[in-house]
Image (cartoon, rainbow, N blue to C red):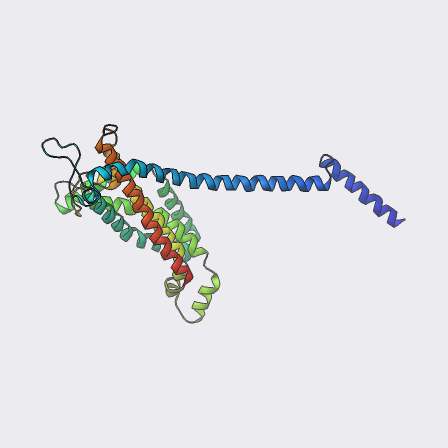
Length: 321
């Protein structure tokens, strides 16, 4: 009797499940799940292919658009020339971009030298030292800093920072490389802080407990155990910061002076990005000047790719070690 009741209950339950699923058999449900899995696999693959296709398209377009001017001007004259005067009429036009290259290198390096230590110390404070309430307040401020448009950074720098540098150092104009470095250092802070903090929080607690058990202080543990363990993530944060610094144009064009000079700390300068942004709007279509701007874009693209490759190789070597 009990066996019959159990069989009857099982049959009723299967019937109810079949009604809820629209009368689909288990095999049909399994096929539906497999079809859904296949669909999402294809969707993810398509998204990945689209991302790679965008990179390839940009690369091919820059190569096709940038090579004609380099061939006409000459690679050495283009990369090592010290004078940029594409619209000169009294003398032969010049298309040397060495001042732009050196300015971008110095500006990015200066921003990294200023921004990385500050961002790293802030990340350590948020992840390891700060009380929860203070950490929440600072974290919110960092997130707001990341959401501020670059033109606002440039506007504040032009109104506040540039006059301050002019008065402090007795210059005729405070729009110089130093102002650009300070603005870039502030702009890369959110990327460095957010990624570094996440990486530091992911360090296993056992590492720090073992260090403290061996007699190390908390500060020694943070710098000698936690930070080396999170070095790959910190390097990734630096990569993101470098990419932000190199690719910035709007804020820099407002505080750097936008003059094609050889770089000096208190000299008005022009970056690779600002050279493109400032002249592309009035360069005649099909002219050598416009093609040279495409070539600057190609140089900038290759420059960013080279830095990313070198830093990624460094990260890979650190992981292997």
